Image 1: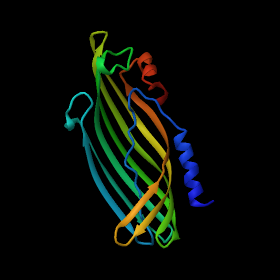
Image 2: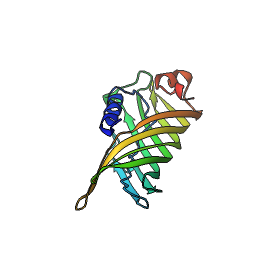
Image 3: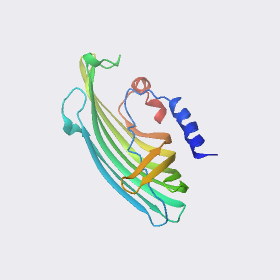
Image 4: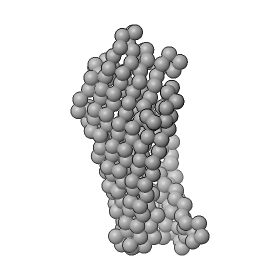
Length: 213
């Protein structure tokens, strides 16, 4: 199968997929996109991100970092690994009412994920390389939820182990003067295993968290 056709099929699958979640138990990490051409090539990248929490105007409550690396073992096979950490907050009030149970809430999220994978790469021409990687990731999610329920103050928590399996096809384009440009897609299968929670069964149902056990 030609690489262009493979990327098209993955694009169609992604466009047909959707997800609805009232509590954001997953936030996508920055893709690890190795740009490798031959044995011995390596890549190391680190990034930091931050932003304002909705409804607070405070950029100190949303921040995180990514560390990524890759190494070509041969002219066609490579290893990749990455780690990401996030601290995020979300505010819901009467002006942004999504819940029937909850009048207002302030939710803090903490996420950590370690990922490893292996892949195959091969030249399409002298300036382009097709690659496909697959792997798994393991991490933890913690959620603290405080607010008002029928004008009564409440506090909830949710903790879960996270597993992720992925496949990532892509194409890297190389230019001696301008470096490289990467085009890739990623399909992921996520699994959450609840370790502890303060939500009731009714609340778990409403927030679509019950199926994570």
